[in-house]
Image (cartoon, rainbow, N blue to C red; front, side, top):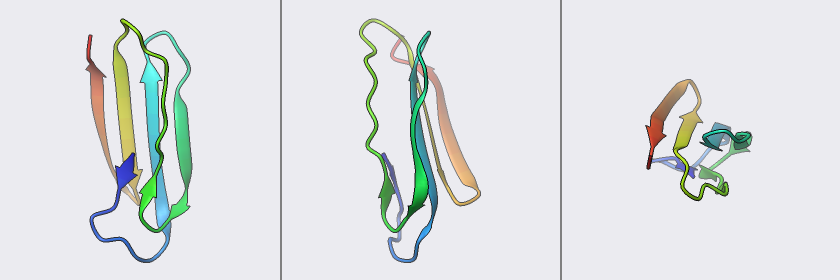
Length: 65
């Protein structure tokens, strides 16, 4: 999930989750509080997550390997 620190007016938010070797699953749109949740089947695989609110974004790189 991508969660806004200060919920309120609608703004563009997105969250993306991808298991290595699989397709990315995302939720994008204009939300007031949060985007997501999204899930992927990632048994014994690395996972990458990204999230954005407006022009600010963050990403994890490959984790849980």
